[in-house]
Structure formats: C-alpha cells, structure tokens
Image 1 (cartoon, rainbow, N blue to C red):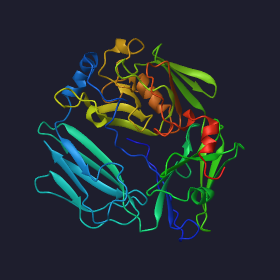
Image 2 (image 1 turned 135 degrees about the horizontal axis):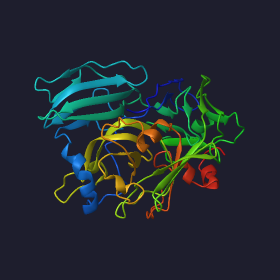
Image 3 (image 1 turned 90 degrees about the horizontal axis):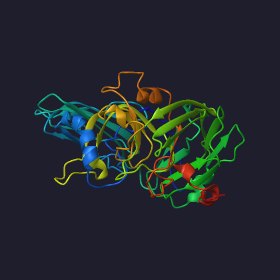
Image 4 (image 1 turned 120 degrees about the vertical axis):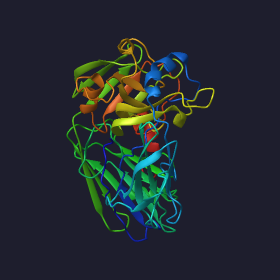
Length: 412
C-alpha cells in the first residue's frame, strides 16, 4: 500500500510560456518490484537468505503496456494488461486526478485486459492488476502512465499534494511531460515560500524536472506555499512540515538511530547491503510507503546465470522507497534473526526484522513504518559503496551543495 495523493490541476491559456501549463499533484505509484543498487550475479550467501521466500513466489507474471512511467502515450495507443503462467483476477484503470474508473474488458481465458475506449489527453492513469498461478499464489502489478498533451502544451506534475503534512526532507518537485526550453519563463511562474522565512530556490536537474528546496531541511511545523501563475490564472498549493525525524543507518555498526526533534527515540538493528551490493551512502528521503510489495531482482538487473531473477519475493512487508533506482528500507522475515545488527546481507536495501505478512506491530520494521512519514530523512553512512548518490535519484536533493543548487536555477 502506498501513500496515495489526490491531484490538483491548473490549466492556463497559452501565453508567456508558449503553451498550456497543466499542473497536477504527483501521486505515488505502486510499482516497486525493485530492490538493490547495482546489477551483478547473485552472491551465494544471499541466495541462502532469500531462498525460503522465493520458494513461495507465484509463477504468474503480469505485463502492463505501456510500461511504468510512460509519458506522451497516444490516446489511441494500445493499453493492455497480460499475464503468463496464470490468470488475471482483477484489473482496474483509474484517472488519478478524478478517481474515475475506466471501463475495460477481460479476455475469455483471463489472460489479457484492455480499456473499452479511447483515453483522454493530458491525463495521468493508474493501472493495477492482480493475478494467480495454477497453485493459487497471487501476484500484483501496477503502472502509472500519462497521455500526450496537445501540440505546444505541456503538463507538470507537482508534489507534495495540497494540504498534506510531510517530513522535513520533502522537496517541491515539478516533473514535466515534455522538455522545457524556456526554463526561466517557466520557473518564474512557480513561486515557493515558507512561513519559516527560509530562502527557497529552484534547481533544474534536466529539461523535465524542476525541484525547490531551502539550504537546510525545512523547519518543523512550518507551512510551505506554492503559487502557480502561468498566465494570470493563479493556483495556490500549501503543505505543512511535520515533526523532524532523521534516521541514521550506520552500515559498519549495523544499527539505525532514529532522532525525533533532536532526541533519540529508538535504536534498531539493521542489515544493509552486502559487500557485493553495498547500500548507497548519503541523504535519502522517503518518497513512498507500501504495507506489502513484490520485489524482483530482474527489474534492477540482478539475475542468476540462467537469467532468472536472483530473488523474487512477492510479499515484502513495510517497504519505504528511498531512491528511484530501487533502494528501500523494508521488513525482512526470511533472514534468520542473528543477521540484524550482525551481518550485512541485502542487495542494497536496508532490512529490519519483521514477520511474514507484517502483522506483528511489535516488530522493528512495523514500528519504523508506523512512525515514519513521506518526506522523512534516512541517512546512510559507513557503507562500502564508493558510488556518489546522485541528487536526482529519487528525492536525494540534499546531497547537492547549496552553491551548486543555486547555480542550477534559471532565475537566481
């Protein structure tokens, strides 16, 4: 389950920006069949750790076309959900902005589904599918796609959502469906301020993504206001910064220290990335939360010599995304208890002790999940990883020095 967001849409006539600017709040997606940082062969020690969970995995494989994150999808392009080695049990397609469900038809043999009619332009859709194999083992698949906007227009997806409360590390992010040429014109029409008085500056990571943040984390309890005015049609979005929670994972001591408003409230034994697949060092931000999710090594290039996924765990509990490339902090029920606080065994994620199904609220993973919110900061240190965590990998903006951040603004 992910923290879902409603969409706020702003549409203005073409003018200064040379096109329509439609801004919507960017909701989380339920695709997270990912884990780990680097491609490579499956280490023998980790294979033994993952084997019990892999044995229970469903043989059914869901494929959603177009793939997750697809942009500029034609309104007449084929949208299809198929399954191999099983049958689809449920498929829903909804317009994220309105929640309206799109009618569709399931094939007689239960192996494919497609919407009944054409899609709307400049619209974001969420597709969710469930399937079972011959043994009744279930699997889920999810994808979010955005249809093409009219020529000369573009869409910007804004996060976080209007009226939300987030952690101190949550940047304001606008992702555009088309490359932005006149960055100064677009950035000048998006003003971000904080009741704390902190200076907020925008930074273009590329032609499609513009983020805003202050030099240091947002002040707890402050209110952030985003004013959007592409052509005299102003729309205001506000969100609140909650308490400060910064959790530091020490890969060397294999402990995570949770600090709430400057005070340590809990220390949790962890198991981070193995020597073959060390966890990224750096400041990461929780961007999505899932009560349960499937993780498949093939999605990040982790396969065995025979090409099969190095791991395929369909019910990873209490998972929270830390990077776009697949780093999560999540519950782990398949490893023996002694690994937590003792041995780093994962493919790059941070594992916390849990039980299958995640139903025991006393487990460390359940506690951390229940006491975390979108926008909370998780810092990893003393990992063997030598790769610099890219600031645009998820919401890792804080890894960029302030002078470089300001230099990336088109108007500062």
